[in-house]
Length: 233
Ligand code: IPE
Ligand code: IPE
Ligand code: MG
Image (cartoon, rainbow, N blue to C red):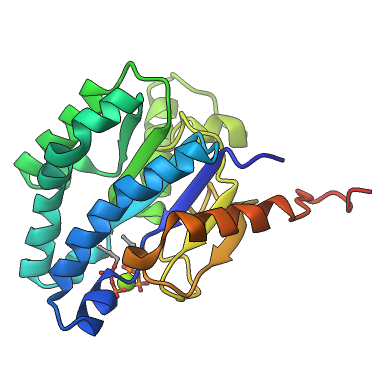
């Protein structure tokens, strides 16, 4: 089965920077540049949806300096690369509660979505102020509201529930990659990875190269995905 949808937990920026004797923010800057490199590589390797975890609902716990730096990065990133992404036909989707971001950050992200909305190439999905538990709670509330207003019946199935998720327009995740060697999910796409294959790689995000991505995809293609059935002959 092909790998249509790759999700990545881009972890290890801070430790990478520290190991170079630099502030954590230097890792985030290099990490943002690597988003472009890996998006190009993923597209060339046939991936149709690349969903990247950039800032979680839990990352607000970090120092104000670090959070402020990350909130300014989208403006820097899209100024450098948006024209190239448009030329390459990428469609930008931002997933998360955007209205809780600083106003300028929200505007930059919404503009990127608007400018690329007619593109049909790689879907480059960036999760910003995203948390999976929050997403599911919001979906449950939206469904309850529709029931109260008489727009929906009680007793929807999984396909209908998915329509309330922030990822309703995208297929399920085929392969989830986490960089930096941590073996956890950190509140990422809990619903969407129900049957994803998992890859945990020991390199930090700034060191995650197209070659490492290719190795993950090669390994994925050798996996036997059963979805609860029996081993294919
Ligand atoms: C991932 O790198 C980027 C964000 C979570 C914003 P980290 O900043 O978590 O780097 P480490 O894990 O502390 O090294
Ligand atoms: C997950 O990384 C979030 C992002 C990559 C944006 P964290 O560094 O926040 O995860 P924990 O704290 O190690 O679980
Ligand atoms: Mg981390």
